[in-house]
Amino acid sequence: MHGVEGVADASAAVGGVSTAGSHLAVAPLQSTALTPPPFVPDYFLFPGWRIAVALVIVALSVGLSKYIVRLLGRPVARQFRRQSVAQTVLRIVRLSIVLVGVGVGANVLGLELGDIVLSVTVFSAVLGIVLAPIVGSIINGVFVLSDQPFEIGDMIELDDGTKGFIDEITLSYTKIFTLDNTFLVMSNSNIRDRDVINYSAEDERTRLSLDVLVTYESDIDAARDLVERAARDCDAVVEGGPDIRIGSARYPAKPTAYINSYADNGVLLRLRYWALKPYKIGRIQSEVQTRLWTLVEESEATVEFAYPHTHLVFDETSGSLHVTGDEAANRRHATASPAPGAPVQSVSDGEGGEAPVDAADSADATDAPDSADAESADTAEN
Image 1 (cartoon, rainbow, N blue to C red):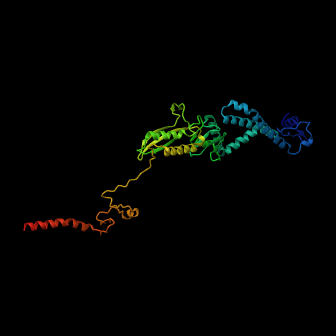
Image 2 (image 1 turned 180 degrees about the vertical axis):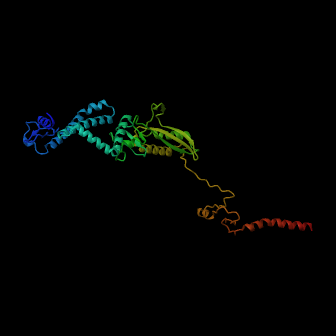
Image 3 (image 1 turned 90 degrees about the horizontal axis):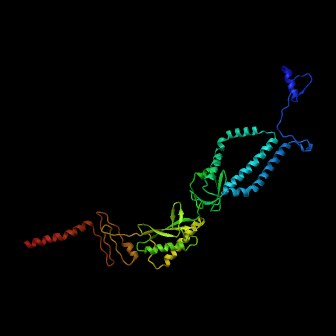
C-alpha cells in the first residue's frame, strides 16, 4: 500500500465506507458516550435519553449519599471526640459520593475525565480572584477544626461584645446562635482574625468581680463580711469547696472580698466570686448587688456606701455670706468675691440697711483717726 491507496485501505480496515469511483473513505468518529444494551427497547431511546439517564444517576447518588451518611453517623461520631470534626468527615463522604455520581452521569453524556479536569482548570484560572476569598475561608476552616478554639455548644464572646453559642462549624463558615435569639454567620477567615472569649472550653465556672466603695468611717471588717455574704446567698454562685485551678495558679472557690485601694472618697473593696454557669452573668451580678443592698440596710454595723462629697470653703478672698434661717434670704444675700479696686457692699443683718461704702471713702475713714490724733497732739503742745 502506497500513497492514497494505503490511506483508503486503512480507512476500510477501521470500518470506513468507500464509494464507487473514489479511492478515499472517511472514518467515523468514535464516541465515548454510553451505548444502550441490546435488550433495551427502542421506545426508551427517545431524544435526550442520555440527559435523563445522567440526571437519574445524579439523583440516585444524592440519595445514596444521605443513606450512607446516616448509616455511618454513629460510628464516625464515636471515632471523633469533637462533633464538628465528625460532621466535617461525614460531609466529605457525602460530597465524594455525589461527585462520583456526577462523574458517571458525565460519562453517560460522553464527557471524559480529561475534558472535565481541563474545563475545571481553565474555569478556576479565570475566576481565581473571585474564588480566592472562598478558598481562604476553607483553609481557615481547616485551621479552626485543627486548632480547636471552640466547639459546637460552647458559649463565646466576640471582641465587639456579642455573646452566643456555637451552632455549626463548617469548612467555610461558623454559625453562632446569639443571646438575642438571632443567628450570626461568619466566615472562618473573619472569625480567626478576631479575639474570641470561650466561656465553656474547659470549665464553665466563671469568675466575676464587684467593686464596692465604703466610707472611711465604716467598719471595714463588717463591710467585707457583708459583701462576701451577699454572694454566698445566691444559688448561682459557688459557695466554697476546693480551690479552683487556672493553669498553674489556684484561686479560692468561696466569695472573697479584698481591700483594693484607699480611694479619694472611701475604701474600695473588690469582691471575687465564681458563677456556676456563664449563661446568665447579668442576672447573677444583679442578684448579688441586690442582696448586698438589703444586707447593708438590715445590718446594725457601721457600714455606709461612699459617694463623692463637695465642701465649700469661705475665706477672706471669698466675699461675704449672710446666713439666716430663711433659705431664700441666704440665696439673696450671697455675694461674690469683690474684684480689686471695686466698691465693697455691706450686707444687711436684717435690722437696718447700710449704705454702700466706696473704697476711697473707706480709705479716708481709716485715715481720719490719725488726723484727729495729730490735732490733739498740737493742742497739748500749745
